[in-house]
Length: 129
Ligand SMILES: Cc1cc2nc3c(=O)[nH]c(=O)nc-3n(C[C@H](O)[C@H](O)[C@H](O)COP(=O)(O)O)c2cc1C
Image (cartoon, rainbow, N blue to C red; front, side):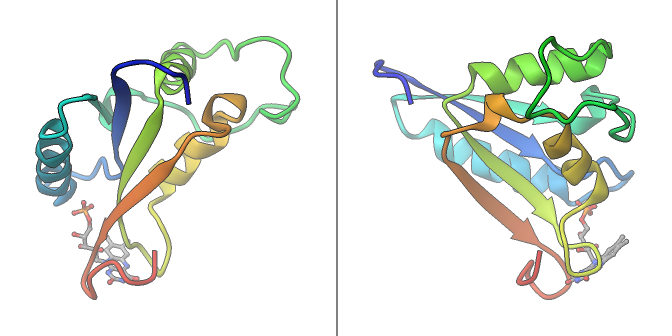
């Protein structure tokens, strides 16, 4: 984390489903974080980053140049500028959502050495995501 006055926290909305509960959980945690005066919060709604399923020949950890896909490049830039993350994830089949896992897989270096917290929910309270 960089030594600076404010912390850039990205809250990632882990469901793109119509009628998603994710909106409520995202709005709640974003408002909670805003109460910390040093935090600058931005919500990254995966509906705004229409990334294909990860399909590159080169693993993100070995890539030499940014991936060409515009949504991926935009998302990667947002991850790069963050100091930390909150992932808002539903539990789907005892795991996280496919759309969030796919977003995680597109990026590597830009996640590195940054703290992450999770807000999880589901039929049994998000206990097993
Ligand atoms: C495909 C699918 C799988 C689910 N699997 C689980 C599960 O394993 N455990 C659980 O507690 N809830 C499960 N649920 C319930 C969801 O966690 C719950 O509906 C949640 O609100 C979904 O988040 P969303 O509305 O933000 O998409 C599942 C729902 C879906 C659509």
